[in-house]
Image 1 (spheres, rainbow, N blue to C red):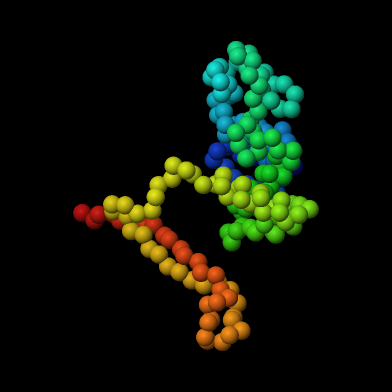
Image 2: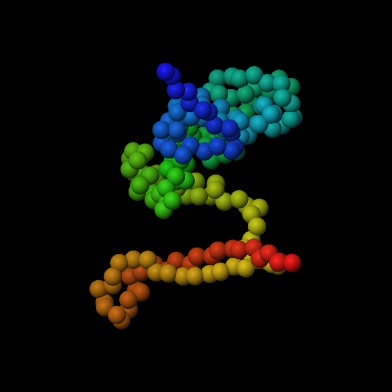
Length: 183
């Protein structure tokens, strides 16, 4: 009785559990293969001459037969020139995305075993920058309702009722809802 692990469809699937993550991304080759599927869904394409005739060389790079350019699947990404294994980067991404309440730099430092908080903090900022789509639509516009609310996060203030928000952080939340016409 054997159990087969269903491999992800690149760009669509996401490991829902840590066990699935470990099965999908068991080593560097699996991580590199996943990135290649995202970057080049129809097979390798040289970023310089757009030719698809290439072969693998050392370090997981590709050599274009037409123009001779060497390219890595990580070139131009947050993984570019990293010395950290891709599997560690993928684990960081998984931890940041899997926890619905978010992951802190301290939490990332703890689960990935970073030697310093500063490293975890830098990684968190790199990941957050990478998750923002520059061409994203802005909130609001014709036929779009935007609701805003605020709250304060933090413990009880030792000052009692007076100055009760001095030790709290204000958080603003925006939710967009499309208005549909009913005919």
